[in-house]
Image: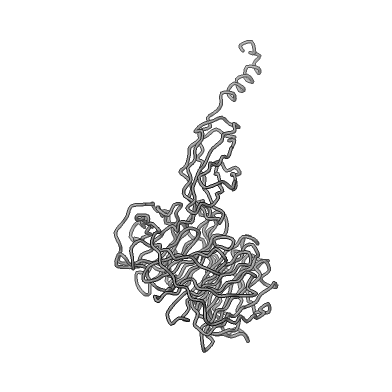
Length: 544
């Protein structure tokens, strides 16, 4: 477990605390849902869309020192964390909240979850709160947050690994066209379309636009497939929504956005499915999952037509976690329970791990738990506790977030709200790399990497040769603990830093290995060739 703590004076320090063991568990007495659900499909291909041009601001990185030294707790609060990872980088953020009217989003980076580097912060006269992030591809991450009530923000960090690459804050102002009261945003990224198409965002909002006015209606946002600077807003006239969450099925190119909706009798779940490859003219429909109990605070994940939605349910007169799952892209849904003990289980956040496997984190009795399904949501395993100090996890909306192999949450163990980090035991361990430390230009050198996976999964390896050439890409699979080898030739004379990372069959990535330095000095053969040409030029070959 790592603690990300914020200190606002001349420096910003980020810290870690001792790693935790995932050894506590809770036994779930799972009851079958005793009330059937009804799924209503509504074609939304004619749902209204409206476009405006964007405005872009370039942000500067927080070029501040890094530290892994534990520091004292501070009186200010840090709340509403979000995290994404990819390319060997954790991209985490939260809202710094020194008072009820002061909220600013801060973002930090880490390659190992131990040392956190300040990256960028968003500070202004208006509140910025409830950040949400996702990984686009490579070193690119995108995010959003709640700010001024009718502005939609896109934070576009094009390459977090390169300090020279700019960070863009892009926004669309919808207030002049009748929109107001934007709620908390969520974002899901995908790189299958144009580079400027980040993915989709979701929110709940109010509008009096034309004949499609609605109070607290479901909304989604996406960029124009044809023009980089244009953004679209789309909505349905379904009043009474409160919260939303977004996901993209990257194998099928469909986005799924979920909302909780009060119809005057109960809280039901809306699932808005839309063609990501053609959001303006492609397939679009909303599925309403009706039940006789209240279902709120939904979260969603989707892959290869497996769609899983989890929400808080009051079917058993307390807060449990109900699961709606589909294996046909939302045509049909069935129900199961993640957990439903006599205590409340709240604040779920869901992640698709791969295939039919998904995991969800949630809060119970002030602790953070994780549970996993191997069959697309039909059954869920025994929940395992994540945090090591009992009873200190805050129970509130957006109190925790998860990414591949890790989680962040809001914690009050030090008397105020801080942000803590922990790995979840799914990702492979940091690899080791061995091989020659020197060689000649164009000489093939072979290097060996090894890692182990906590679940015993097969592993793939990615070698970074440190010379701006093509890397090895993913090679494998290899058994957990089995050696993997790759070869490379360097063409220039200098010292290179090579490293390797591993991923398992569910795409959980390890941290990068410690670097190995390889020296490629000017070779003797090259020197002799230059000498020969010199002697030949001046007819001094007799000296050879």
